[in-house]
Image (cartoon, rainbow, N blue to C red; front, side, top):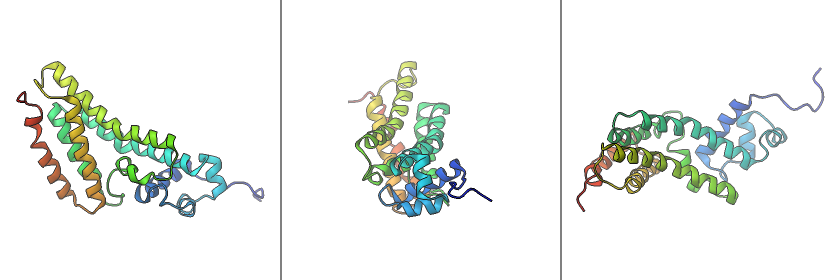
Length: 202
């Protein structure tokens, strides 16, 4: 006979994955504790014992997302043969990631700008850092291209900011129901600005 009052055993990684999907879809405030415990298959005391708090769970869910989609994008940028390819892959792969069947639409990190309402100031700073991290990845690749002579002109910070802004807009459009084809069309339109952004003309 099981000991009375013993916490129910559960798979922590699987439970965190389910919490991530809920937070991704509904945000921090929009996700009720009852929804989390039901999806994760645990009771509230077990959730608090394992993750500390709802915010602690949310922050772990965001980190899990970053280790998946975020890491995939960063790896694709690093592996691209040219810096232009890196930017195009970043946008096109984002279009695919943001519109996958069976997953919430858009980027969890981008959506956290509105979905994280109700979290602490410390969590807010961490989320802002996460949202700017990809811009840093792009800027680093662009600076490397300038140093190597692959690019002859252009402001890496401004170019990275431009394409990150496009990608973030694509995330919002995806959440509003834009199709993959529509998101790819936005990406292709943004790439039309490449020559002007990397030109030495004033």
